[in-house]
Length: 393
Image (cartoon, rainbow, N blue to C red; front, side, top):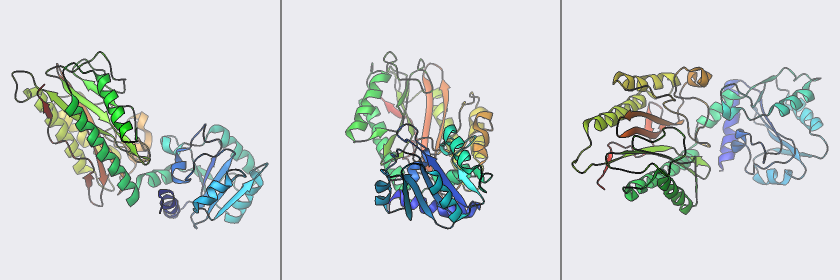
């Protein structure tokens, strides 16, 4: 059974759970504007004319699309009825609505969740124009709760794909340790990882982030050709891949021993131990029913209680069809995160656990693990980094 078949079946169950009559995804020219929900709705996501995808809580699965797109949708065998049109989608859409008679129609817009915000303003206006003289004009609601659940609750097949992506990322990180040399630049490491990914026949889930030593630019900046590996440097690499459409996202740490060292200096060891403890504390808190901000809070407190500056991002985001997969976020109650941190954690959601501290004269200590929520806790999908990788170069 394909992922799309599994997810459309899952959507029916979630609609029942949320007491929503119908989910309507309304799109056009997807080569230009790609609704994130399409990952779960169509095997072939390239639609040209206006298309309506309708799934009801009674199990109806309909697609209304242009004549020349219909054959591809029918070939998937997922939808009960595929209706094609030539001049206008309106009459067929209203006919299907009259057949289903929904009181609530979830559409893809959201104030906080980008993965549930796929409907453009133009399509919103078009849909409202079609519904203005019907009983459905006041039935539209946000699909954000539906899509948070649909994206978050991984099926067994989805979990297998995420785990494979994680395993391949681990191999890339091992190559960083194996190929590190004095004078190798951040840009060199990036190029090596991109070549490794290409050799696997894959793509990266985001451009690799490489941070070497104390003069690096932390965050999402491009790796520099001028920042190079030296003794006493911390090397932090953030790297993930897509495997059959599912993402991983891992950070790993190396330390370059100085000539007179067999172990890192105390300030480097303390930084790593603090980051490790914070992730462990977050993982212990992470279980079904806990709110996203509560997980972030306990991990963040470990960092600040140790005297380090607060990291200015969320502890963890979901991974799946995208590297930042929307829905519940393990983050602080900051305005920019909105209601995403107020969602309860659910079983089979996959999260990152990531944070960093700065060590003067050495660089950033930054760890990121990937986990899946179980019925009573969480399990690490990644081969957890238990100690700094020490390199004698």
